[in-house]
Length: 298
Length: 304
Image (cartoon, rainbow over all chains, first blue to last red):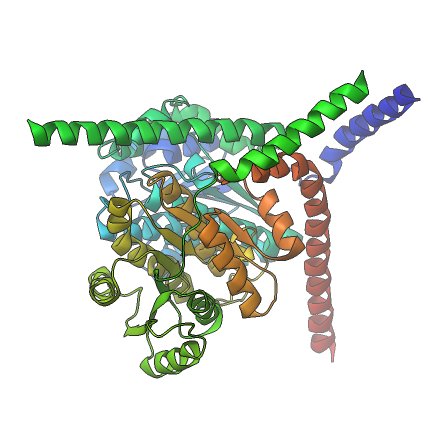
């Protein structure tokens, strides 16, 4: 009797697996597609641009520094697969002023046609204890990481909805899934991206526009090097529980559009991780106090 | 044999329930405590202030409008339980400039002593479609809801860490647990508060941070629940059955304050996610229906 029920359950799950691709969104065809990558001149953004270019897309790179943009362009063009492909570079600060960003998107669309996929990769990271971070950091990180994703998305959304096709990728972070010691300002900005993405997806789903939120782990990029400059000891120790990836791996995954979620068991494991993080923090705090007392009596 | 295993499991769970209060944080004593409430001149903030005052706390209300502050002060003072209690009012915009906020906290601490509990309730909400919202809304909501919580927290954290005691409450929203149609700018600002709270929670172990969620209820109910959870030191504060379900579902990597909370989350996760998928499906069909109706009426208008 139990065996029969188990067999039914297995058959049902297999059926779901087979039906799933039929109701999932149709994959976006990259050959000939217009892909805009903000923060595309270095790190994960550049690797995403390369990955899309290798699959036949036309790229618009958006970043602030013109020299870095040209260098990235040269690097990307090495991977062309036909004569027609183009890499366009436009220099702008995506977090400053919405009108500037809107203009940039207009320019890009005049040259390479409507935007099929927007990748919001412009962002930066600063690590440090809540009371040690410069007060301006909170607003700065929110401006670059969050507003710098809002403005480009806002500039492309109307056209995507009209054409009934589009992809918007937000690059969050594992620090956008859990708040970690030393990442108050950074985690907040990356969580904000998730809130934006969830709400936006609900608005655009009937228009065949799909949102992807990527949560990369520590990745070997110039941005990561910047973050390490002021990283507290506790943060470093906690981060050692995961390994640093190569940006090419991260980019491949993001482009593949794959996100998988399983709970229950993972929540249990998560609770153990949280416990170990707590003890790392406590240990460091006690050590610091011991050395302070030692210094005072010395 | 199976029965014996089941009996052991039940006994184990009961044991966990009994041990749980022993390793939870010690409740904060409100009588005589100094509670600062930003956004305390109206709504949920005012009700939180009243709730704390009724339990003997000394209150500092922080908001922008001086008249509303005085009115709120009069209302709160009706609930005093002894002669010594004080309600202090300070007018400032908590999102403008950190130095101003730091000064305000200094003033409050000179009059009523160090801050035992900070409630970040200053905030506002704007709802509208992503492409219809004024562009400045995104920055404005982030400034008021997020930075307006960062600055006061920053101003009290060092003293709380030194004294090894304190509570910081962040008022998020259910829209800070899931992104909803029409709430792109608002959800983002409330999700940000969660990220801040989770990261901050890990930094000083002794201070407890709470994020709050509710459905449409009376502000007095909300306030009662928040104050109760704040005193207990629970990371998540929610009201009602959907509040409970949403908090368990979106707990993610959020810390637990009691073993029983963790146990419940592990057990209910799968079921709640299933229910959530049905909810999401119904939201999607509402959105699709409205879209089709709008298009029908546009076509009707054109041919008319």
